[in-house]
Amino acid sequence: MVVAFMGVVDNLSPFVLIEPDGEVSGYSIDICLKIVQGIRQEMKLPTLKVQFFPVNMDTRFSALLNNRADLECSVSTNNAERRKKFSFTIPHFFTSVRMLVRMNSGIKDWSDLRNKRIVTTKSTGITDIVTKRSNIVALNLSITELDSDQECVRMLEQGLADAFIMDEILLYGARASANNPDKLVITGVSLSVEPYAIMFRKDDPEFKKMVDRQMAKLVASGEIVRLYNRWFMQPIGPDRRSLNMPMNYMLRDSLRYPTDKITN
Image 1: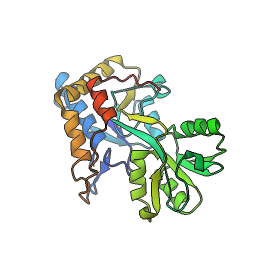
Image 2: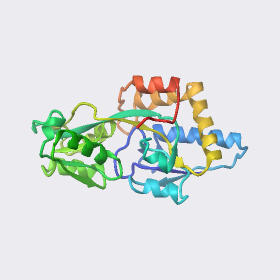
Image 3: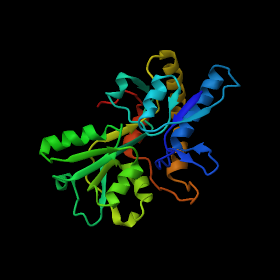
Image 4: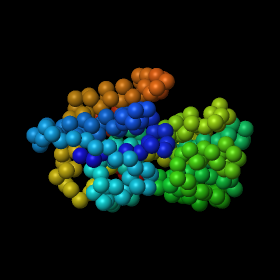
């Protein structure tokens, strides 16, 4: 079974962590491995192997559509537009859209962005969210989409952009990779809620049933909570640092009444 993952270019820890020896791990990866393990047992296929397939923000979609991957296990948001083409599991994480700015920029909230230069990453859906916000309050934003979070941070540090808008959890990783992270700050009230879920092909209802059964087992057994605590509450990575980020109320509540039908 082919598991697609992002994270080769951008820092997606703790969802995807690529060790120096090339081993792939992380919160999203562990969930997918548990799904494969459950399918292996259910289908009585002891020789079923996992092959990892690196993708980026663009190619994650074509990898599924062209049958080059079976599961996409990174930080893909389950939203109404994507559900037209893909299936999703229940969410395994919720984050919000905020912005990364230079500490001396004077930018504190969205109203401070009027006539500013914005950067974000391609194929994330952030541009649509920001454009709607801009149109509502006439911010007159100049928005540029770049290939990676690293490019966005570089533009911000060089003064070629005023704000980098992205999922809050990813902004922490982007800031950590900056040349001078102490000079950058995450700010702005939450602009939208982004539910991360495992993404896969839409045209295989039997496969979806199998995947959903495995996710249901992870929830019912409490295994998904244990995986969360491993990656968000314990030391991880080469520097053995902990995010110390307890599970938020949205994820806790969603696991009580799990559904893949997200209203957006």
